[in-house]
Length: 432
Image (cartoon, rainbow, N blue to C red; front, top):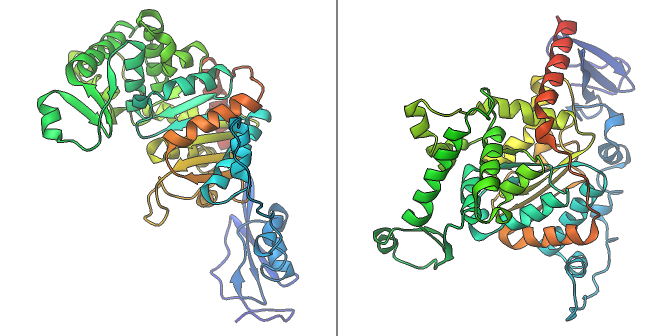
């Protein structure tokens, strides 16, 4: 058992390279020494337990607790919060007024106000902003809101399901999507060739089959324009370009807007979508170019690597959420060239954290994986429906933030990957 004497006894495994042990002021420090970092493991003798997996200087918040006794000095555990004074609803309220109203209340209304504040900070600090799209946002027309955010320079890159890209194109080509009903007999709808997404109806022949032919045609005919080693962003870029040139209503598609402003759109689970399904005939016929999804991993990591500050607005969870967040571990754990992860994270979700799924995992939990820089600030989860909250956040940002110049990441991503590759090999040579 560890004591407070000058020569405590520790029951620890043998310390071998690349570790070294130091003892000072009742603290045993085991340092892991690598070219790209020094990692500290510490045990306080009087408590005989591990305190933190990093140096004291890195985290004043936790030190505050350990040096001053529990939670006594943490304002979260005192009756010192802002007084709740019932706010007033007025007939002339703007969206910023409504967000301010929410900020003076509680529950998820207050979380939404926090999300708006974080989004504003992301934009105003020049951070590289990623939008992640899970679920089915585009079939209900949310693509136009995304387009407005791209136009203002508030979205720099996108990670989406292939479904959100596929259904977005319906509006560009004028293919019918209509409001339906959620309480129906789906056997009847199937017989009538009507596909249902909750309370949205899409016609099998007039919309889906027509869209399928367009996707297949555009990818096949533009195979010479698509790089031979293509990421899914290259596929999305080609589809956006085709819609820009050929669609009746290109202004109704966020994919077209992304093409115009060189905003890369990644579909890391492209095989699990109608975009991937429509590449199946091309594969069998030996036509077209097929994406390298590991190149998606490299390009997304390079985006974080080149960003002074970075953050994301996550609509739902799933593959888009994790693909965006794993850029931190890709750089730090795998390539060992940059530590930190994201500076800001906002998620809108209805998923629970207690089932172990990534969709419901708290953003703070991501700190333990190196996905965010700190779990203490700059992140918030708003529990609810993205279709309700996302337009409010867009309207708020467009109201209070000045437009930014687009970063045009699509035009730079290949160069960034090559630069990252050089750093990776240079670091490897030093370690070897």
